[in-house]
Structure formats: C-alpha cells, structure tokens
Image (tube, rainbow, N blue to C red):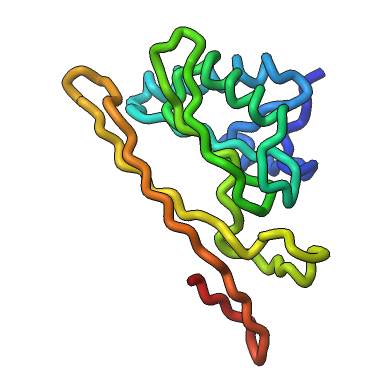
Length: 175
C-alpha cells in the first residue's frame, strides 16, 4: 500500500498533492529515485535549473545531523539537482558544497535557512534557540542556454534577525 502524501504528519488535500511533490523518508532510496524521476520530467518540460527543497532535520539544532548529510549526498549522487535548500529546524544550519560521486558536479547545500517570519520567540521555546535568526539566500545562475549547461551559481547570504512586537497588534521588524 502506498503512503498517503503528508507534510508534518498532516495529510495533504487532494488538490495540493498534484502541486507538491512529497517523498517518504521511510524509504530513502525510493525518495531519491522519485526525486530523480520528477526532476527528469521537469527538465523535459523545460526546466534549466532544478532546486531541491527539503523539509528535514531536528528542530532547534544549529548543525545538520548525520541523516541530513547522508540524504543530501544521496540526492547529489542520485539526481542532477543544481541546488539543495533545507528547512524545518527553525534555526540556521551550515552550508556545504557537496561533490557528486563521479566528481563532475559540486552542489551547494543549505541544510536549513531559519525562520523568515514566525511567532517563535526565544522566550517561548525554552531559552536560547536562535529561532529569531535566519539567512536570506540569493542565487545568481550563470547558465549557457546554447550549451544547456549551468556554469556557476553565485550565492549571496544576508543574515537577519526577526523582532516580534506585541501591543494592540503584533508586527515584525526584520533587521
């Protein structure tokens, strides 16, 4: 029996299933194969750049875990994705440049980029959890349309801090 598509344990409505690709982490090799199939379909439909967005990792941990690192390498080796950007831990984790097993590609991997807007406050998550910090990542793709080849990815990283004010109404300042 196939697993019902879900995000964070919440079953996705049928109309969202068609718009969102989810992979079961119970079968990591199968998830990589699914991603490779979907990527191939996207490239056939005209996608020049493929960014893999992963919802993974342990909340509030400022360093990726062994599962994230292993899975990232599996995606680099099992697909031809150009970039990996992760989320879920609610804090910033490290960036790495992963080399494919054939040595032909280097893939930037941002394990987690933090919370851009949330109502999580250090005071509400039991101390110094860095939930108010994050990075905005900006990418510049040097893509040769004639050769259909990605030459380089320029990366700018802008750190930010979110300050949530309460009063008559809550509002955010991003510094």
